[in-house]
Length: 288
Image 1 (tube, rainbow, N blue to C red):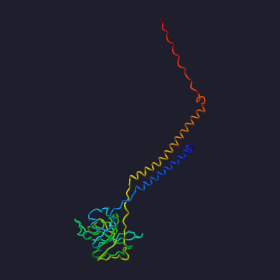
Image 2 (image 1 turned 90 degrees about the horizontal axis):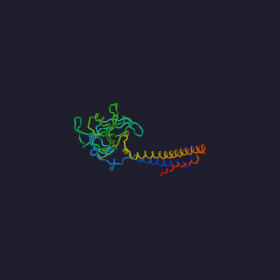
Image 3 (image 1 turned 60 degrees about the horizontal axis):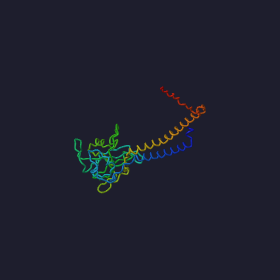
Image 4 (image 1 turned 30 degrees about the vertical axis):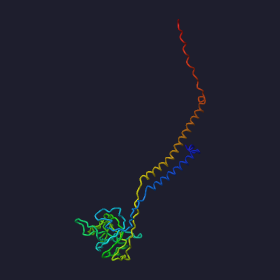
């Protein structure tokens, strides 16, 4: 069969099939790149600062539409309600987040047996390399601005110790602080009191957490087309192979006919004998 495949016309056919397959593969790659697309950003940017009380409601699930939204809130800190969350990175260095409870003015008050008379929200105020460098939050009425982030999941089977937390988990902090809370936290970017910005201590680094990249969506139709083009690429080579195989079989049949003619030349060229028609019976004589 190799001899048949090496015929000039089949070599040219193979080149054509490979070029066609390459085109199909390129089309498959293009469809594959189109199958995963970033979700279109919302018309209103998350960088637009909005009041927390208008964006999120306490006692409800955290909607994904407000994740990473820049918000502002006015209220006060409670210095007795502060924890350190370890294992946080800043310039590739491990340290601690300072997370303080912030009582939000004009926030809806939750009702229930365990509800507190005021609604709070955890605020990640900054990062420190050593736990001893974490100071108390500012006192008095503070207007803070920061990025609203969904609550983290607590690390199971981990006791962070007194004054520590395994994660910025609303569920965990509610039990620690015994307060009603929003279902998320704020990564503060600035704090203002009396019209003046409150500077961070020298050892405290601002978080400045950027918005997360938009979620990717899979277009299953484009993904199906990508697989389909790969099938077409393989099918083009398969068609070439089938044509070569059929030509090879025809060559085998021709060779068998030639061998038969060489072995029985008389039979191959014999003229078929003609048969005379059977003699007709003489017409019966009619006796008179």
